[in-house]
Image 1 (tube, rainbow, N blue to C red):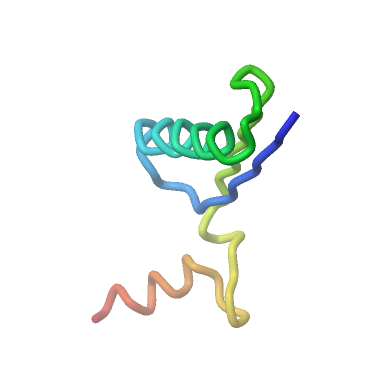
Image 2 (cartoon, one colour):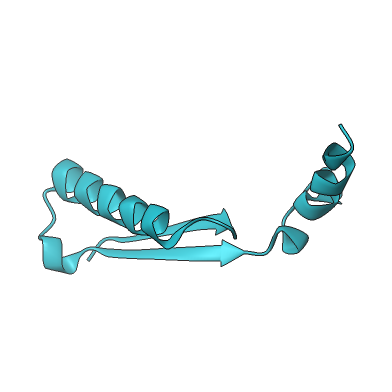
Length: 68
């Protein structure tokens, strides 16, 4: 049973998340030949205040870039 986990920052439209799930599912089915009903896809959305790079959260970076 293939399990794929995708972590993204929050803020995408539900339709975009659904399209991602569909495309990931299709890629796993196509590349591994796994039965469709056995494929699991989990999408986790993380608040931008909880995702950091270079000791700066994405929310902090957004605030800095807002002034540009």
